Length: 110
Image (cartoon, rainbow, N blue to C red; front, side, top):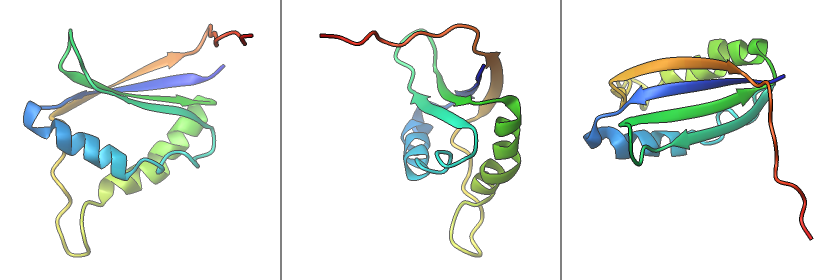
């Protein structure tokens, strides 16, 4: 079964717009990665101040390959050549890992 990785980001109020713009500008960075299945950026509404970055992968090996390649390259950059990398929008990060043991999809209608 698939694996789910949820990156829990602590984002100060003044950095929320920056974080969302950065994710929007990299919207397709993960989509062509081998083993990638799903991505969602979840904005907190109530009960927490943390953003959740949800990704789903075919297996742990696919996630690790993305972490060591495309993800590392995307976070290494930041600006034009010679510019310093952009300051992180999040002030903290925790990675949660899960295995999918059950799942359901909507039933077809009419």
